[in-house]
Length: 310
Image 1 (cartoon, helix red, strand yellow):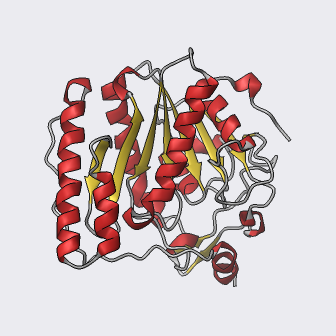
Image 2: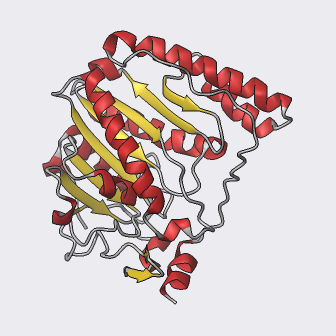
C-alpha cells in the first residue's frame, strides 16, 4: 500500500522518453582535468555532442539530433558529455577556473538530453541572478550536473533510493574534479531539486561542500540533517503550490527494498535551515524573479543572514 501511495503522489504529467537505441559515440577521452586543460575538455565534449547529433539525425531522431546540436554550439562549456541512452551532460556557466563560489544543480526525475533545455534554463537563471545580486562580489560559476540516470516519474525507481545510490559516487567525483579546477578554497553549494535531493543526501557524508539546499524534496532517505554526516549547512524549502507536499513522508521495507524517503526536510524534526520559497510550484524554484531563486543565490554567495524565512 505504501508503495502505491508514494508512486501515486509523485506522478507528474511529464514524460522524458528513454531511448537507448539511439546511436551515439562513446564519451571523449580527456586529459586529467585542471585549469590548464579545461578549454580542451570543453572543445572535445562539444565535438562529441556534434558527432552524436549527426548519428541521431542519421537514425531519423530529429528531436535528439536538435538537442545534441544545441549542446555542441561554440559557446557551450561541456565538462562532460555522453549521448548514449537518456544521456549525461555536465555543463559549466561562467568561469570555473577563477570562481570563488560554485553552485552545482542536481536535477530530479525525467531529466535527460531530450528534456535538458529546461534544466539548462534553471542553471542560466541562477547564473544571471548571481551576476545581478553580486556584480562586484565573489566570482561565481554554475554547474548543471546531469550525471546520472534519473528515474521516470511513472516508474517504481522514483520511490526508492536505487538510482540515488548509483549516482552518489559520480556526484562525489564531480566535486573532486571541480576542486581540481577551481582550487581547494572555492566554496561549493549543492542545490538539489526533487529526487535530486535523495542523490545529494546519499553523497553528503564527508563531502567537501559548504552548503546543501533541498528544494521540492519528497524526502532524502535520511531521518535528519544530522544523519547526513556533513559539515555543510543544510537548507530546505518548499513552494506554496508544490504538489510534493502531498507525498507521504514514510519509509518501509517491502520485499527487501526500501520504499519512500522518510522525514520531510522542511519539518522541524529534520533540522534543516528552512527558507522561504514563495508560492511557486514544483518546477518554479529557479524561476527568474522568484523568492526561491533569490534565496538560493544568497545561499550560494554566502549571504546567509540575508536569506528570508516564512
